Image 1 (cartoon, protein in one colour):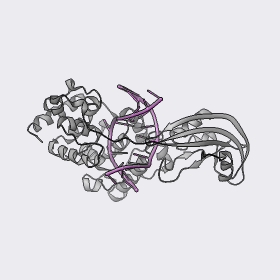
Image 2 (tube, helix red, strand yellow):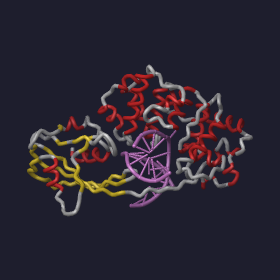
Image 3 (cartoon, chains in turn green, cyan, yellow):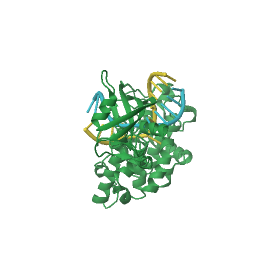
Image 4 (cartoon, chains in turn cyan, orange, brown):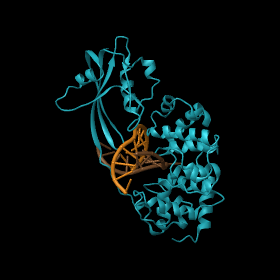
Length: 346
DNA sequence: TAAACGTGGGA
DNA sequence: TTCCCAAGTTT
């Protein structure tokens, strides 16, 4: 690698960022807790999606102490619709650790901050550089795309081991006195100029130092393989309503998909089986009548697809069950497919 | 290391 | 419609 123009590259990037950066809510603070929250929300999630969640989150949980001891139901409800719900559970565990072990001060070194739940190599570097100004690498998808082009790196960025190459490149290039603007500059460049498709090279502040621009193959980089095969699951979802107009709901398990989120009873559809009978036995219900109002749709997750058929059934509970009034249901954290059903039925 | 883990938007 | 993504981490 040739870092001959390192100083010039740094200056152009940092100056461009300080001049052109978007005015985003988390750029109005250097509070490590708030930066941390923003970085976790931004994982695999678009900026425009995050903005309203970020504001609501900090209104509700303005300090590490308040967030650390909030009921999990509350924190999940605040995260509802954002996806990857383990993020907020890990965040709370990490923040609690900061409150109890570090006196409420987020560690300012990579070793300690990396011990916190949900803080991986990227988030550690992002908080250290943005909140504390430390010259640490923060390599995300943007950074790998930008640097694969600037440095003409053809390694497959889908492979975990490739990230190390980019982390080393950042540590070589980073401006030790402007680490925050340097790291954010790489990401902002990836978001605004050095985009995945049709990069705007003619507007790029560092095209003079870009080997891909020179070679004319920026649009072919980065090299990225990997395609995931999807599984299909078919479910019957029942809105089991009792005489008082309350609905049966259940909380999902504490690990795996949509952990700890609430849902209406679901029965997997299999050939030669009666889903209504399954509902009745599994939840100990007398099913009085089944409506013919059926909602049908599919919900696509990153690695699987739910095919849902939902309907209302009138029931009597044989034993004590968790039935909720509509107003109570609104308070429970639910995943998007359940929200979709509820909004239709309500 | 590969797979799991959500969602909504753009080409 | 289908595919690919968007500021990753955990297991």
